Structures are given as structure tokens and as C-alpha cells.
Length: 98
Image (tube, rainbow, N blue to C red; front, side, top):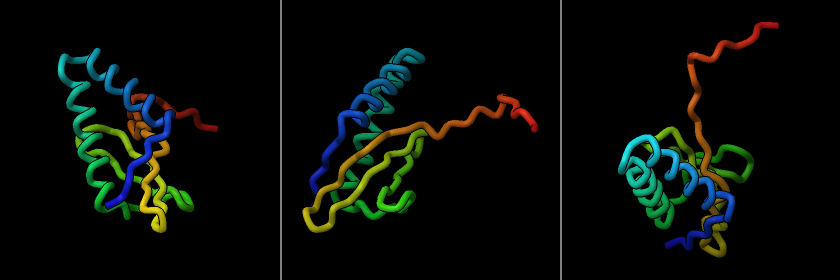
């Protein structure tokens, strides 16, 4: 079993995102937070998801367009959640062609 350490940045990102979703629809922020918590629980027992950036691994949420970025210290049995970021891309944004 791995210990979970959540950096302040990631904690704030989760809070802000939950508040945003709650402002869109009553109860949606809670659903986001619960899904995030479920994924954190998964990391306690199985933290070896995709290694994305050198030592940083990622775990996407299933129902929301967000990704948990974390590192794993196998010796100390610690998972450190570094950030929780959106992977949403708006298809309506036009790209400028150079």
C-alpha cells in the first residue's frame, strides 16, 4: 500500500475545478471530486500508470477531462500528486495558420 501525498498546487486545482463544476450544475462538483477521490484510492494500491514526462506518471479521469500527474517513490512507498490538469480542447477554436 502506498502513502498518498498531495501537493498544495494539486489540492487547489481540485478545489477550483470542483467549484467550477458545481457552478455549472448542482451536484456536478461533488461528482468530479468523488471521481478524483476514487482515482486517488486506486493509486494507493496500483500507482504504475503511464510514465509521461521522465518520472511523472499520469492517470486520466474517466468521466471528466482531467488528468492526475504524479510521481512514485518505490523505496518509500509514496505517491506524490503533483498536479490535476484539464485535457479539454475546444474544437471551436480556430488555429492561426502561418
